[in-house]
Length: 483
Image 1 (cartoon, rainbow, N blue to C red):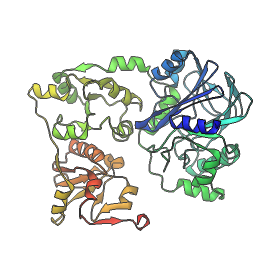
Image 2 (image 1 turned 60 degrees about the vertical axis):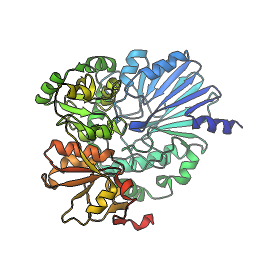
Image 3 (image 1 turned 120 degrees about the horizontal axis):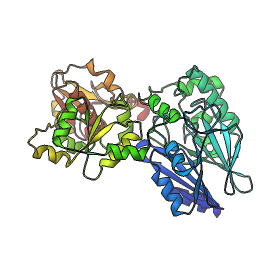
Image 4 (image 1 turned 180 degrees about the vertical axis):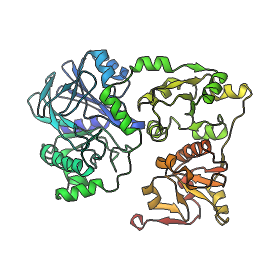
């Protein structure tokens, strides 16, 4: 009965059994899981996001004190909140063996234990994703292993990519070999009922094919995770190193911030969430600032500031910012819906972009009221595209990822993945008409905005993307493995 209660409670993201309180605090746009673990008024936070308030507020509400901040590794896909949270609460930051930081931290030994109330955390050094990667085994009041927080070492249905070490002389194969040893010698030897809590879910670029499930057990993963099946180390290395897309360009920069420290988030938000007039924005744009429109794709299509780019907040905002805006110091002016100005600046800071100049006061309406012209994006539905398919030299650009394209794409469409678009802008004539699509319309609008900025003059968005195209008779090539 206790097990059934435990599972039902986990489905809600929170567990409270035998004085163990675990809250998985999930951030969807980064597919990132931070953890709040409490016992007898003491709290451990694992892999916190950049903003500190959610953790402090939760501890305050529950009358608890944050004692430790456990970092599983130097995160590459987001800037952790460990430094600010430690300053605010006095908690100790703990890394596993081999970590070297530019701020005060406790570098633990493999097997070292830390008490939180009646609970014990044991450090398990599990290198492979990165050299310092560590998992944290949670044991209950009688010393029985209860859960393991695996960071980016073990995901649900996947393992971490072994190519993100900071300034390391280790090869991809070296790290993959370490990952094999960590899995087999540390994690797979744990009792099968031990819960597995990873740092990421589906959508993260830190693994190839992560499940959308948020937790599992060691036993289930040994049965279902392809990387934990019986195989020689050489076969494992080949499997985990095959098919890895290059990491987004910001990964190494964000990891360096996590290792060396960064600006206080509260100060940053106060200084960077500033109202700007239309005149201010025009001046900033002339000085090289990037105008980043964070509204919806439909809103951007109907009218946007000339030269601005679109990455909507209601999508994978942070990861696309980090993929497409190459300079963390790029001055940025944000265009938002009313009330989302601070959110936009915060979400930029989550991935290391700390140079926002402010936001357009009054939003896009203010631009029009000042008599400034707005640009629009042309678009057509899938049925309209179907009528054009016999047009000579029709250029159809599919900006989905290579794997998506391989599974199902329009005959003669060119794969122009958004992930790598900034390094391939010269592959297609800039003055030819191009019809652009993704799966649903978000990524294609992002792509069009960046293409316009570098000189493409005749771009048409396919509203509804591949989902709309599939409802037409447009010829497609479908991978046989999907039939």
